[in-house]
Length: 312
Image 1 (cartoon, rainbow, N blue to C red):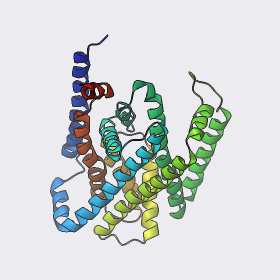
Image 2: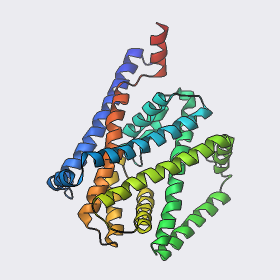
Image 3: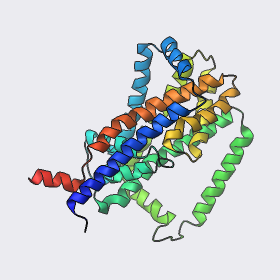
Image 4: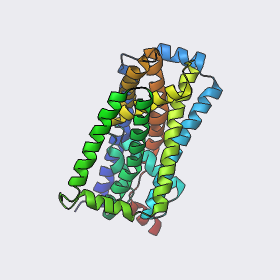
């Protein structure tokens, strides 16, 4: 058995690795990305961004993360009722833990740490539902965006691939792999009350509209004069393609930036504008939550430790 003292030291080491790892990856991308000219970036901030505009953009970022927190608080009702502060702590710590893991997988573990080991599978399942609905919306809006932009061939190819995947999953839904199957997964989803599902979908839609319109308003700030539906359709297409690619959270702006440059080039928008907007979105929606989440990671205490302190 591992002694309590050893557990405390291990917990401290894990916390420090997560926090320092997160900040190292942020620094590495910001300091060594050849595509970014920080002199140009600071010039743009000085000339384009007034205090009012920065506050306006921050409101979008706060609302974006707040809606995610509400989603998590709502889903966790399946297990227990948690406060808004507790949900905030878990979501931001999860974002920090997921920063340098493939497709943010660390987020699942980050949230699971706040619950007893017996509840780990349920927490992972609920987080999958939480992120899954966002992915589904990205696919739906992205496909609509591609169709609107006239990428008909890509639309039908992707639709066909999606149909084949769904057919395969349907035919193999009863296949059992180490006690897990798609049928069991669907059964677990159906066990969640409809009210929770409905609220989760509404919050996910609100969140999608929030960050996509933040992107939209940044283009307006740079004086891009393209009609609303064309610009929004391009944004939805970018999010769809970028979210489908395997990536790390700390590379988010690189992946989205690369995809965005390809799409927005068709609209004759300068590459540097697209890259700076993608970077700014990453700073506001990933780096800022990670900075706050790092605090929650550092003050993290297991339930056992917290219970013992209360008993004393």
